[in-house]
Image (cartoon, rainbow, N blue to C red; front, side, top):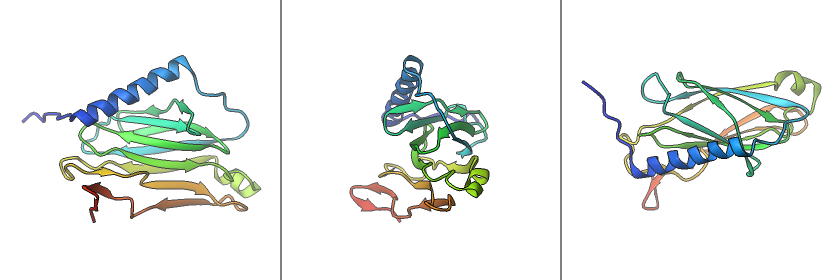
Amino acid sequence: MKKRLNITFATALLIAIFALLGLSLLANPALPVTGDQVRIVGWLHADGLRQDDAILVVELNGEHCLAAELHDNGQFFFTLPVGAKAKLTFAKPGHLPKEVEVDTRNARNTPKAERMNRKLEFEVILESEEQRPGLHYDGPVGAITFVNGTGTMKVRHDPRVQARTSGTVDQ
């Protein structure tokens, strides 16, 4: 039995916007990164093993998009400068898009943090629109920051940021 890909208008519009953002990368490359960097490595999971139709957009400091490598198996790679704030948007046709915020301030402010925070790894799981029809996330589903003074990584998942429809919280 062949599985049919059902792309909604909203999903198609989202893909078109992400494609335009990708083209703007070619015309206006991201600012050159100087100084320390944090390498981001992660895995995107959704129905099925292949993620060749998934999209990852990395918006740096609300102004620039960075290039990110997203493989068919869902693994992604990119580098952020220390001191940057980034919004990561993950999308795949037929799935609810998710945003994650990453703030690399304080990532390398102590010798221990300097050694430990060279690479950040995490996973993102996208939910099928079939399982949650008509719903969407109101904002970022999580944030990764580093504690001032120690450089310790802090991960926050906000359970109040839930999918909503008609102004009611879906629990």
